[in-house]
Length: 205
Ligand SMILES: [Zn+2]
Image (cartoon, rainbow, N blue to C red):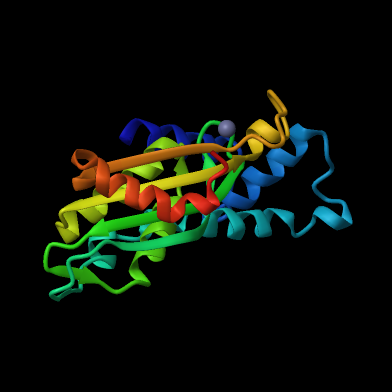
């Protein structure tokens, strides 16, 4: 990391990039590399917009899952809790192109629950980073498992990847489905099937 910081500092000196203008300078350079003229009317404010947009789309790095899941409530409820159809938007770390879709999360409480709105917030915290869908799915499940300590967690994500749709294999209707099953969702066929049946209406398979 220190080496990288050093390289970056040297590069900024060579290019005479003023402090706090790295983003704009980088986007302008990118526009030039594409073959565009960064000074033309329509592109004048693009570097600033791209900066803000990318900062927002990667704002999950600043969010702490432990904090999102810090407030739990003790209850007698011991049935499965499911939040389905959570919209998510992420960026593929290989191409910096979006992938997006639906996320379904379930957990089996062990005397403790969390506010329902915390789960979509957790999904956002991990989605707004550079990701691969497989890791994103696992991180959501593992964070719930670690901080809520339920009897089990399930997370299923179905997503369309623009890097596959717009380029590469150009398969426009292909969706990727990933899942992570922990605890009772892994050990009990009955629990896993109950969860999958409840979300099935959304899945194409
Ligand atoms: Zn990609």
